[in-house]
Image (tube, rainbow, N blue to C red; front, side, top):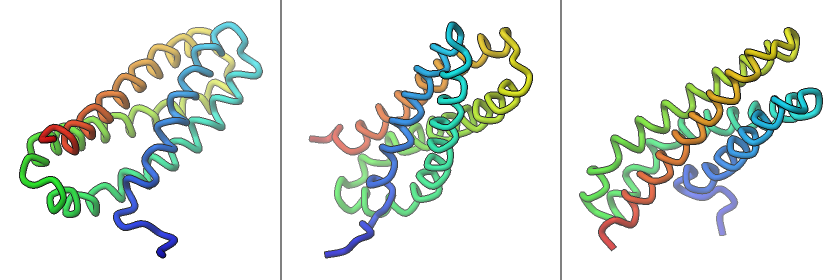
Length: 140
């Protein structure tokens, strides 16, 4: 039995997804209850973003295994999955930076902007997951 699965990507990708979605909820709630939820959002989104970077970097290693298991149909959705994963990661990196800035500035307008941006980020994450599911299960 191996402690580290091969490929690593499917085993670790779900943690950042969960943290980003919870972080989005916290960011939206911080519009009304800023002190607690803004700090909680920063921690959750920052940890999710660190995991997202690792997930993104392990993604290319999973491509060969996916093609072996599911055939050439993987290629149809792989590009879209990779693009949405990249956009999601960049969005949450920006959100993490802006959350840290707003912790110091405490700007109400930036808080609202973060709420909108985090909902956009969550939609990008859902699109990434949708195309991951399509590339794995579309031919079944």
